[in-house]
Image (cartoon, rainbow, N blue to C red; front, side, top):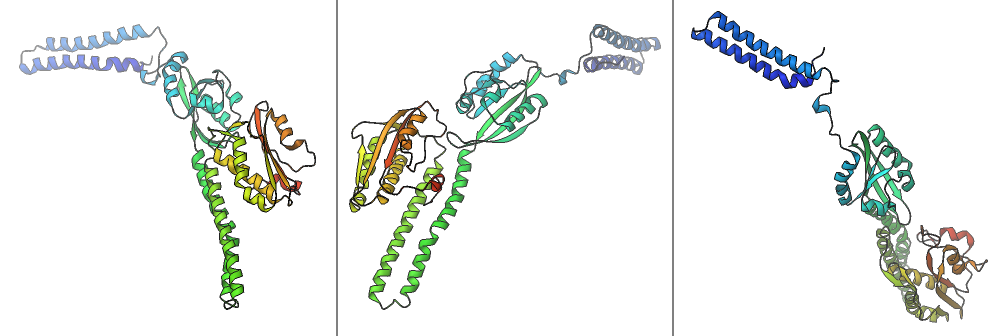
Length: 400
């Protein structure tokens, strides 16, 4: 019979100490000259018998039961409920979205940020019901069943762009293993890096044309037109217009950069779309007067509140009205209408579908429930419209 490791760990030292003390006593008597051979032998035998009896008693007490593994190899066994009670407050306090998923793929614990981000409330739901990402589901299964650790990149495009790095690791849970998932938000970093690259590309491309024009004008002024006062005045006027174009391009690029940096942050302020449209029309009053174009905004007094960035909404309204004025015939009319509609289909009808031949594109809020109440802004002019083949490209930067 193999001696259990637990027995050896507990009784080896006492037996050796007892035998050693007996031997030491015998040796001391012998050296002192007062020990008889019989006494020395008796002490040695007593120590050996004590060790044997200790061995026999322990083996007898543990031999009827199955042998257990070493105590150091046994993990503390906690019931899942107790485990959740102890770990729950810790998970809830984490600033990043955190989930605990059991071996059956069900969410056993979560924190407030995870419930907000993944839009669920009840525990016990299957992870596949709240997160449709095959690679993350596979990582959670691997951690809970096979004990593997993985890092997965996760992107959510609607309603706003979000990027996460998901850390998935196994964690002991009673007699089983669960998957601990932590979602690290990388949206700001990724968006900033992308925006920086796009800004440089856009700036170099858009500024190339006016810079080339100014260079040619300067070359002309330094040559044949140097002594021609009339030509010099005309070329200086062209240069001034090109510089003004460069200034507008730079302002547009800076505005675009600001928008893209914050596009992953949902707006929280409330703005009156009627007031925004009226202010935009008043700002463009001089432009409309030069073309003898009348701009009418309705309703005149009612409010239509929306959640959005007031500055960006003003830019949208100004761009739409400005384009309508530019492409309207002289003595034409531009109508701006703001209204509310219950549901996506009703909003699409109000926003332009009622004119089958009109050039239009739907810009309804992405990811919004179809039954939600919508507020629409419709700008109509009497110009030629936008060719249908160009409608899919209207959201491209600097497309004309």
